[in-house]
Length: 123
Image 1 (cartoon, one colour):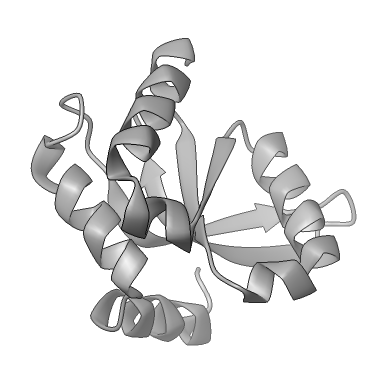
Image 2 (image 1 turned 180 degrees about the vertical axis):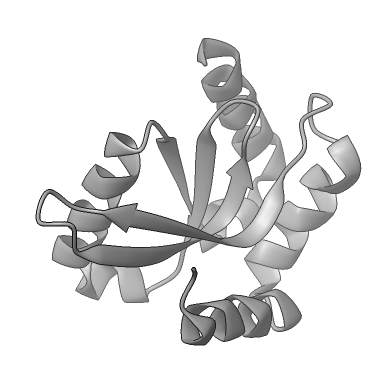
């Protein structure tokens, strides 16, 4: 069973996306990107080797390709260690992660689209 606090947090994030997240979502929702279905602010649960349950919220998730797309703002400059642990856990679950900075999504969607297309085609 998923933690209700994390579900509430995911709902709040869906209701209040950053501008970059809103732009990304508009471009990938309803299978607009390569016919792939993306979910946004999706909760994933992971149990480590000590059976400690962890919950993560993926900005965008494509189950078909097992890809997580993260749109990074300034906070990610501060929480690098947490991001690294989180990324390792998600990769252990079989997901591949691609990151874009807010500025990339806001200012150069064509480049983001191209990079994401290449990343998806490799999976």
